[in-house]
Image (cartoon, rainbow, N blue to C red; front, top):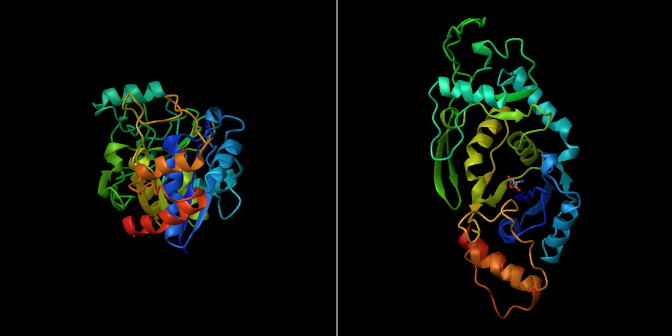
Length: 315
Ligand code: GLU
């Protein structure tokens, strides 16, 4: 059974950009005779706005986008994330990290890791077990070990474990096919490095929560904004480390603000104008390459017409 989902972060009401992703994921599920779920991604609690979750669910309902099961909230699912982290740690794939941002920057500079075109530099691996771990410093964060175990490198003052030579990840180069963008490729170990699973402040990282929940909810088709495409290789790596299936992915075109930046709550995107829901939906549909269907009367008829049109575009 095809299962799709929309997974908004409740950092504010939906805007024109998030409606595109919501509509696309709903159409995709309907086009494939499947179920559509809503998951409120409220793990990053300091960024969440009280009441934004209810506002989003009301906005979706006004647009005729009603989930097939009650929504779930990530803030209620910590036990699942902890189980996954425990499994990764037991398998030697997750390790505790004591590095502050400052420590990381200093180690990156020392190892000559440069920032490429605004991208984060990879974590330099300071707390990797084979390099001595947190070495007595208090460690509250957890990272995924993304790659090849390094040869022992003596570090002054740090007792390290014997040299390890075997690989713990079969391959950190992830190749995947996006249903709209085509074949994509990323070497996670060299471009991102060992990424955070649980933050030092105790909050669960998006990457772990999304992978655990997509699997737990039986999601087969992920449809979301293109800004998230470069998270996909990390998520596939985590799925493999946890023995979970990889869903199919489709990343939708971004809606850009007047300044050319992605429309987001951070750059002050306006909440959806729902005085005329059909007009707002037509605008979102147009961005997905669907016809505005001017003679359709009302939201249900519009949605019904777009389902087969979507299936033709994205079989
Ligand atoms: N919660 C994420 C966001 O609102 C979306 C995550 C996803 O669809 O994987 O940007």
